Length: 208
Ligand SMILES: CC(C)(COP(=O)(O)OP(=O)(O)OC[C@H]1O[C@@H](n2cnc3c(N)ncnc32)[C@H](O)[C@@H]1OP(=O)(O)O)[C@@H](O)C(=O)NCCC(=O)NCCS
Image (cartoon, rainbow, N blue to C red; front, top):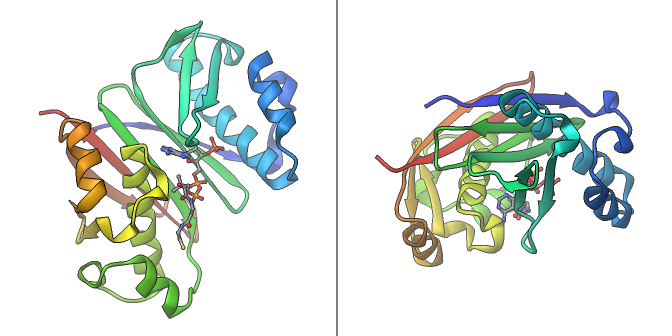
């Protein structure tokens, strides 16, 4: 399955008024923390660039507003956009992915860093820990977050209920219920570095 990715260096963002619709600007004005404002704008700019190329519209004809649970919802020229898309940001970069063929997509970018053991055992089920080292654990983290974005839940779920075991996804408990509600799409996971020193995962869901 193919998808398009747009990477934005947050140090090179255009001003909000060149990117945002009126409604988006209203939401943007409620954000107070500078880092959050920059990341929010960067994620929108990344996805708008992809959609403006695919749909041949201006970035301001694409509107991306969050639902109550933070999931982005897209309209293009006022119509709900049906393709699959996702946004992530990390350490000075915003990334968006768009897949016009997949039914669902979730992405996550994280910098490779050393994290304490309590994080590892609190966040990952023992079955997932088939490797060691910072790169392995960061990759695993991006896989899990990509999957919970695909589900549309974020980490409101128990993180043990979504398990990524050697590149395959397993669902338990509330996550399994959500997966059934989505109609049980076939999920594929891929992980690359995308940028030096980072790990990036894409979870794509498709009905066969
Ligand atoms: C969605 C979630 C996984 C975000 O993860 P994150 O690593 O903090 O942030 P990312 O930059 O990768 O992604 C944020 C984007 O995800 C998207 N997103 C948010 N909620 C979402 C949801 N329910 N479904 C799909 N996408 C969602 C948004 O586009 C958001 O960016 P925006 O608000 O600027 O539009 C969030 O639910 C979460 O729980 N974060 C906590 C992170 C955490 O505790 N991780 C555990 C490691 S110890």
